[in-house]
Image (cartoon, rainbow, N blue to C red; front, side):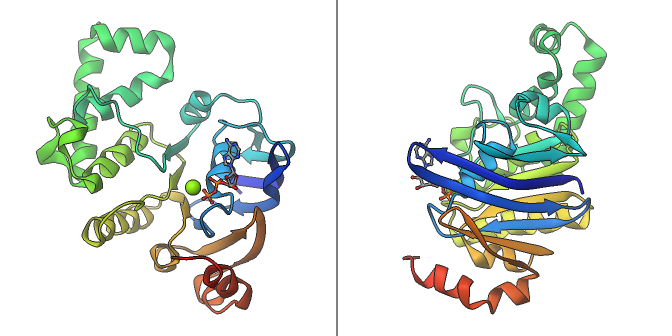
Length: 250
Ligand SMILES: Nc1ncnc2c1ncn2[C@@H]1O[C@H](COP(=O)(O)OP(=O)(O)O)[C@@H](O)[C@H]1O
Ligand SMILES: [Mg+2]
């Protein structure tokens, strides 16, 4: 298994946001974590990606425990991600936002990149970033600032930036959050292309419809606990899942 989450528990004071959750993701598999708002999805994501320390349990990436490993180290180890609230550098254009990813590798790399000491490396970085932006469908807007881009394009840039580090696992936290239907469909298409290209994906979603077509397996959490796990058809018909979703306003 590329990612193994075992009995993971995260508390905020008296609130148990994630309660002994276990699941695994195999290479080239698409697994989705779904659950109503407040279920603990983002908290789970933040523990997996090293932003939060769990009270109990373990996360293994490629067989090694990631607990205590800094988020930027996990990124260079092959764990790519995007955020529920898009995080792009507001003062950098789309192309520069993707180029900056490669400088995450080392501290010296950041300095070298900012000063453009290495012309060959700069050329490679530009070429890669342009190719990625073309691939996600934002090539024509590569010189635009994030604030000038529609929300769907901002997400595409964020995905391109994650891909620039050539991740072995890509984790997307609510990739269609806040999007109008047309934008959401575009991002769902993009996820399908990532999947078809053999990317291992962990999707974190509130919207069950988004993950039904794209996922090999779905893990449902509610009030921090795993309540169901299985292929999409099974999950769709699971009474516990239906109840969890009917119990909240959509
Ligand atoms: N930093 C925090 N401090 C305190 N409580 C938090 C914090 N982050 C999340 N929570 C709480 O943990 C629960 C799960 O939240 P979250 O992981 O954001 O859910 P989801 O992403 O599924 O909507 C919620 O009750 C939320 O209010
Ligand atoms: Mg969330």
